[in-house]
Length: 408
Image 1: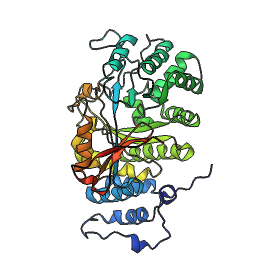
Image 2: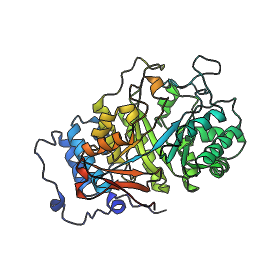
Image 3: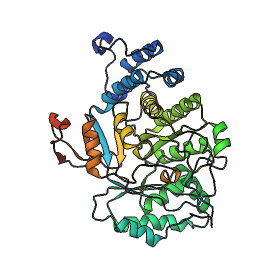
Image 4: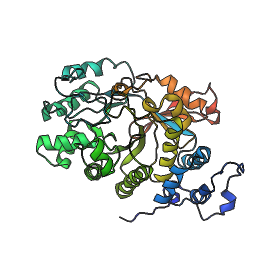
């Protein structure tokens, strides 16, 4: 497949026009770091950034300059739009054979706090929210060796019986590889069988950091990076979309962050199957890495901005407000992000690692956060079909209304 690596060809920016004509006027103090100037010129011309550029961005302390660059790309791709989804999270078990050092969620069978939801309990969770306009059920869990393969198929079918129109985004690449092993099938065969039962798309978890050095130290039993990437390739070839993630802020180097992002960019070049990229901030509390500090807001915003600049073939960058707080996620809408994820409703993984945010946000609060940031709220489904959007140029005002739009 022939791939053109210019941002311009993907997002309708014409670099053949005069460079100076498109050069925004700048406060001369904006680029206090002169190393950002060549990257600025590449961004204006829609040129793909290199690994060296990515490292330069990560090493720079000029957060406002990096944010400015990321916002140029963000507005080129998404204008003033900012998306959210009305979704429900379901973490069906925390029993897991992997025992990753960074995970506070994982438990062994019989350990205090270990749990597995029965199919009836899952059905009750879904029924309890039937009065809400949920369009997505997001499902991830541990690798529980006591659960049969049929449990996963029945889980999907049960949810679809209760909510026939809901989109189920379920099972990370790590879970898919495990289910293929459990069912004695290939990943492709497993994905097709899960799809027939109700699977709509895959979440992006389990990627962590692709560095073999890091994985050997913090998650040696987890699916290797090359196999994670291959599961995503298989899913995308089958037309099953997915998200992508990166867990940052533990023992990885800046170079390893860049390598991770470029590996995702390569897969996206091949199939274009990633819906969004979500940088995940490491939470050390209750993990085997509890001596480490939590990420700072500075690092959170920089990761979002650098991702927006390096992942030129991703349409959407999404801060996970559960991990970085709603306030940082709101600010991130000016640092490259264009999606606040969703209502979530109930999330266990981050909160078991010391997450202090609420477990869910009402739709009205997501809309308020977006409007206050000067963006236009766009309610979407999982595949970014619009459900409702702001009307008119007055959308930045607090009294503007939402209108329902048909799905494409």
